Length: 198
DNA sequence: AGTGCGATTGACT
DNA sequence: GTCAATCGCACTA
Image (cartoon, rainbow, N blue to C red; front, top):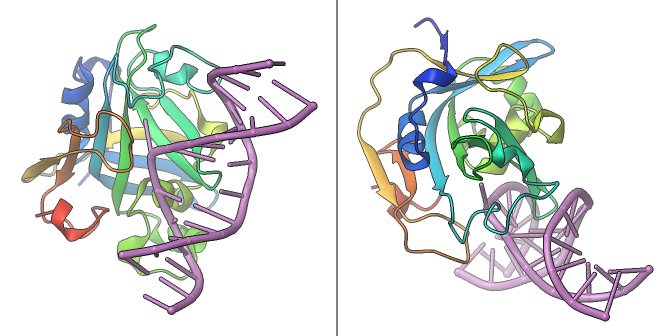
């Protein structure tokens, strides 16, 4: 199926809707040997005023990309080891975003294997840090427009999304009970224990 | 200037 | 299942 770049105008206006809408979309990364891509199978919403969001205490040097217009990349380092890719989701000046947690690899799988080392293909982009490693995503991509042609962008290929499951978010310490994690039900490329992907 | 701590991962029992 | 690695950044002084 042919890829079509997503435009900012078609992004749902609120964060939770965007998190759900992004399931099934495709992340495309320009790499030296050609494009690598994967279908989004898992996201989490971090809402305005959300105590679990990096934007909760206002704009800082690190989180400023969360305050950009919808469709920009917010990339940060967690635990000193893992890069995380988020999509900004609210009008300029409002800090909120959607964390991309897992991809089903589509194109450029050989390059992803090279970036990830010896792991099963199922694990190439199964987890937020792993997907960033697979696609060579780091701080240099922070703040870029994901609706514009470039090194990293969002696309859709018109494939049916399937059932979307909902659960609480993974790995956070505050607002742990909110149902803001979305995933493609039954996909083997979704992260977390099986009980989180019934 | 020093301190504490993650929106995780991979190695190991 | 447990647990340490690792570092940029926010926070305190």
